[in-house]
Amino acid sequence: MQEAGIDFAYDSKQRLWVLEVNSNHPQFHPLKKLDPAAYRRMVAYARSYGRRDD
Image (tube, rainbow, N blue to C red; front, side):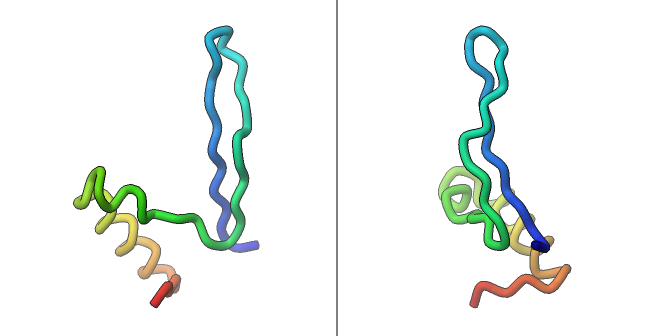
């Protein structure tokens, strides 16, 4: 495994919950509409280490 994405959250009692673990292909696309500049930075960074989703 070369990449991993982990989604987690804290509840009202400050307990940490792991919601989802993704390997190999974390998705940046939801960020594209929320923060286009951050999306472009993340894609550029991923491409700089060889990731291609074309």
